[in-house]
Length: 340
Image (cartoon, rainbow, N blue to C red; front, side):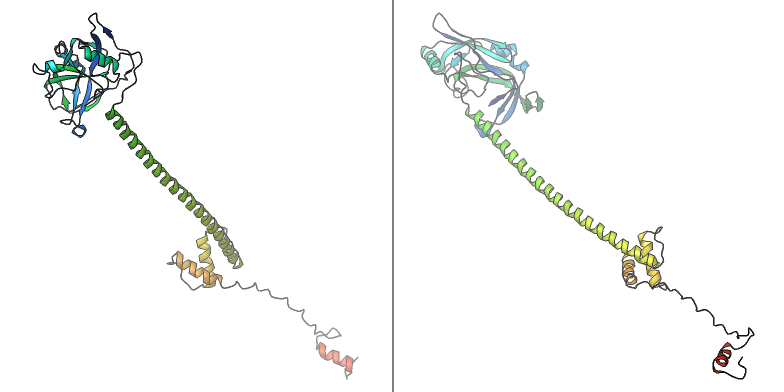
């Protein structure tokens, strides 16, 4: 059983204690606190439960009164859980003489009267814990939530039977101090629980680190892919730009005005120039690209320019009269009947 609480306890604080005129040891021992009491069969308990002890139940006046006058023992809780007339002489070393509230604690003012028990407590600093033996009127199965956590059982009407002084109390608050400074005792259950918690935290952190490494690798891969895609996009952009420039130049050579046309219309215009009879109305982009490749393979014809005609030959006669100029020339060169 472990008592859970949310108030930090300074176990090194000096509790009230004194030695009476009779040589008896009087100690104010905090024995219980409100909270959730966890029982676990896996840790040796007879049953498993999370029992809620409220402050109202803990500090109930009738319940507290049952602690007064009960025996103090030095052994583990007796077999059967009770100190009775049959085992009293063998177990008893003192008496609880008062019970009261101090802050969050139920305190039992205990008077240790057995000489050997007093010497043992003073000399053995590990004997600084206490545990109250009690039974409840009822433990109804009720689920709920308190400020200490969830519970499945309520403790009602605790009646105390005895108090034992022990080395390692399962309720870590149930400790007293007879020295100015007391070294904290080792509670194996608490240490094991801490080790389990730390181990789980370590495993969770390692898992988180593994997940983060995976995310980092994925991010790096994504960056590499983006760089590759950017390079590919740049190369495609350059290639597309060059292709568009070649297309525009070819279209201009065919006399097509490309300023107001998008690239698809320019392609269709070039195809029409090369193959006027082809109907391209139902062509998709793939067909247009194939047709464009064929059209681009046809070089544009050079512009035809007609040379100016030679000046007309003057056939007028030498005397200014209409006649055959050639005959006139022969007569003058070679002579003839009509030569001048």
